[in-house]
Length: 371
Ligand SMILES: *[C@@H]1O[C@H](CO)[C@@H](O)[C@H](O)[C@H]1NC(C)=O
Ligand SMILES: *[C@@H]1O[C@H](CO)[C@@H](O)[C@H](O)[C@H]1NC(C)=O
Ligand SMILES: *[C@@H]1O[C@H](CO)[C@@H](O)[C@H](O)[C@H]1NC(C)=O
Image 1: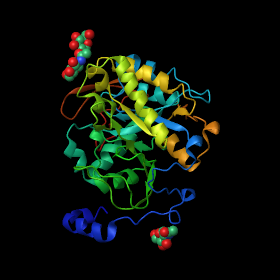
Image 2: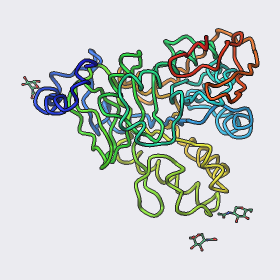
Image 3: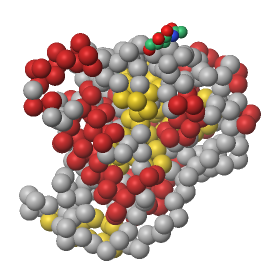
Image 4: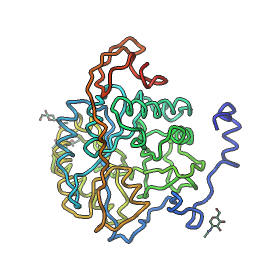
C-alpha cells in the first residue's frame, strides 16, 4: 500500500478494478471471525435489543471543562444494571491535562484518539496521506499511553477532527498503528457497527472521502445522523443547533428525547452523541437541556450509556437487554502528577500535566515521547 501511494494515478484506477471490497453476505462474513456486514438489522429481536448510547467527547481535557461540564453531566449516572454509566473521550493532544485523562480511565470511561494537532482545516484530514495520519493518530495513542499512563491496548478507537476520513488512507493508518475501530463516519441510515471486510452499504456523503477497499476485522461505528428542528441531518449536537441557538432548555431536552425515541422505535441502532465544548459556549441552555434529556432518556430501562468499544463487544456477543451489563473497564496503573512547562517547535510554551516525569520537549508529531 505504502509503495503504491507514489503512483497515485495508477492506484486510483487499480482501486476500482481490483481493490474494491466484495459484497458481504451471511456466509462469507461471520461474527465468530470478527466480521459483520453493514446492516440496519439488530442481531436480536427489537424488544430484546438494548438501546446503546455512546456519549462521545472530543475536546482537550481541561480542568475547567472537566469540572464544570463533563463531570457533573456524566459521573452521577447509573445504568439499569446498577453500574455507573460509561462514555468515550477521544482526546486531542494540545492543551490536554493527562492527569484528567488518566482519572477518566480510572473511573471507567474509555479513552480514544482525536489526533495530535486537531488541525482546523477539513482538507488536511480529507486529503491526508497515510504516513501523516499514522503520526496524527498513532503518535497520539503513544502520547496518551505514556503521559496519562494508560496501556496502549486500552486505546483502540479513533474519531477524526471535522469527522473527516481520508478514505482508505485513514483506515490503513489506523490498522498500521493498532486501532480496531473508527467512529468518524456519519450515516444517513440507522446502521449498526460493522467491519470493513466487505463492501459497505453506508452512504458516502458528497465531498466525503470514504474507504472502499477491504480492511478485514476493522470496525466502523457509524454516527447515526440526527435530524435538527429545521429538518437537516446533523452528526454532532452542536451542528444540530447552529441555526437556532436561543432555544429553552425544555425545547432542547424535548428535541433530544424525541431523537432517541425515534431510533428506539425503528431499530435500536447504537447512537453516538458527540458533545463538544462549543455546544455549551454557543447554545445558552444546552447544558441544562442535555442534562434533563439524559435524565428522561435514562428512565427507560432498555437504555444503557456505554463506551464505544462496549458496543462492539455487544455485537460480538449480543445478549438480550435483560442480561446486558455495562462492563466498564477501569485502569489501575496510577498517576504521579508532574506539571511540565515545555516549548513547542514554534517557540510557544505549553503547560502539560503528566502522570510521569516531564519530557525534555513538547510531545508532537514524530516525537510522541518528547525526547
Ligand atoms: C456469498 O459471497 C460469496 C463470495 O464472496 C459467494 O461465493 C457465496 O455464494 C455468497 N453466498 C450467498 C448466500 O449469497
Ligand atoms: C444567551 O443568554 C444571554 C443572557 O441570558 C442573553 O443575553 C443572550 O441574548 C442569549 N443568547 C441567545 C442567542 O439567545
Ligand atoms: C429565536 O430565534 C429565531 C431565529 O433567529 C427567531 O425567529 C425567534 O423569534 C427567536 N425566539 C426567541 C424566543 O427569542
